[in-house]
Image (tube, rainbow, N blue to C red; front, side):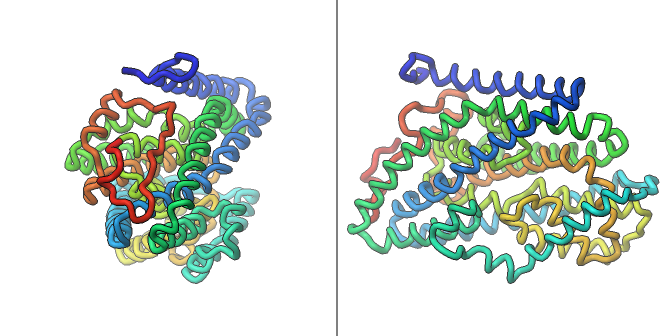
Length: 451
């Protein structure tokens, strides 16, 4: 039975309505950007405002979910097990994505014969981006994880810093035992309010998607991708193959359908497409993964960590774009050169966590360490990078959804009946708190309701 909200509207109707509104908004935004570019560009604040609204709530969502989730663990062994398995999964599939980009780039050579030339203003932009590469050094990366103060992590909105604070605070709740009960109860109550706020903010999703799409099409124009359609098309097809074949195989092996999962997350996927940012759907993804039967502590650890370290779309883009630039600039790469590119990309892709514009900046970092490929060649793809960022975000988003369910199953933290019901469209978003009560420190999970 569909769950009703206070006005009598079913949750199913509510979800379908948002899905339809976002689609209509994307179409209208695309039309305005195409036929009235100046008006489209002027609508940029709508998209930015919505993304900022969502980013505003990401830090509290991560903190509340992780801390209350960890506090419900029997002991710290569960935390260590989830963390190890999550990072093992991230490393394997992120590396596979890099390899796939190399294979496709070599097979189809989308940049061959382009004989590219660089525009002066584009070269200036590349220099500006390359100047941010220092943020990706190992020392800088590790230092940036630790915030200056407890509060500054939330003020700056650095996901890695919030993740760090959340984990150590959650572990402290477990260690404190019975004395942490009042704190856990307070955090649970706050989490209910915060996720109601998330629902409220999502009502503005169509407006944000409308403004973002209108701006992108109005500023860059559909014609801007014609010259570089080989790269854009190859990247989209490669990402689609990764989702359907690789992630689809993982999903099938784990007992669920990748296509049903995509249908289940259609609202969030459209939101990511409209805003070109997977962060815009992070709070909703965490909600839906819990509704699909994954334990709260697993969702709280895997999803935020995956947003930093499980970037499948970004990894495909890195190696594919690097080969494209080499081909477009008639730069011959030996097998040793490509192996060096791959090795550097493995490290730099992990160092991109929490860096704004990570895809493009990480590409600059990789090329700067492999001098065979001219970093100035990045100017070639500046014009279409915005179009590819949407595909990067979508692939990253779907990859993290799959990872959460798979790791949940590995940890015996997945309710298969709830997952099947959710993917069949029977388990709809509730109007009651979407985050179930996490057991207080010292309370055994079997003392809690199964819901």
